[in-house]
Length: 95
Length: 283
Image (tube, rainbow over all chains, first blue to last red; front, side, top):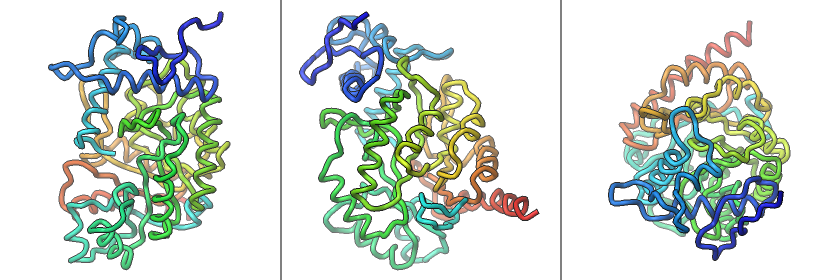
């Protein structure tokens, strides 16, 4: 079935991840979604915001493209990555 | 084979990272170090103290460049200005090979300054390999791509990480910087056997090895480069040497950096495993 979700242009403020990464264009869509999530401001308690830009639950959005494991949910994994990116950007991380 | 086209046919031994807290010691005491690894982006400047120090180091030591911002796996094209600066540095250091990570970290010109994991698909492997080839052709130096530690996997992936790495390097005809600690960290985070990874990459393409310490949290490991190398990683290193020979090895210690001697001595522990490998291959 054709994916009816909107493609992720640079101006789409509520991007969603493609289901398959079968081309560089699809790769760019995935990277736009992740970057949009990673660059959002953290909550005052240094956590990832629980709602996506379109009001959806962030857990559902993350679960569309990040695999959970037996210890961490997709949301937790996304959250951890967001905090790491924040620390790297502020010069607190290593390469 | 330790000396191969992907490390410029060199047989470097154990190196450590050139780090700011150690500059004074190195320049004053001139310790015996087989080689230093520099982070390219720290020296891609027009002048000033970083280049003064680098030129002094280059007078006495061998230097290999390691980058953190090529983002072979980004959908974006290369930043042309970054490439030009990198090429100038490559000519300055005469690095026998150049390494950077199999990752992405930027999109639409915005940079995360992190090394983010890839979706492991054939289309992505082809795209990434094309970028590596283009980089090598422009920079005119052998390239080794490093496996990153990963904390996220994607539903869209079509293969394992080591299958993806193998696919990329074969398509790109490039080398591998085999980061043994990253394999260990990823194996714990994603529940796979790290020896499956080690056993199933193209060993003839390994131009360099990284070893490092990491941190353990309740539900995951983090590649922090701020501890000594742990025993399971040393064991994996020993196994890697059986597969690839005594290839150039770099100890990474990038945070909470102790004295030069402590870092160097940690790196030199690799000699025990290299000596064992030499003995067994001579037998």
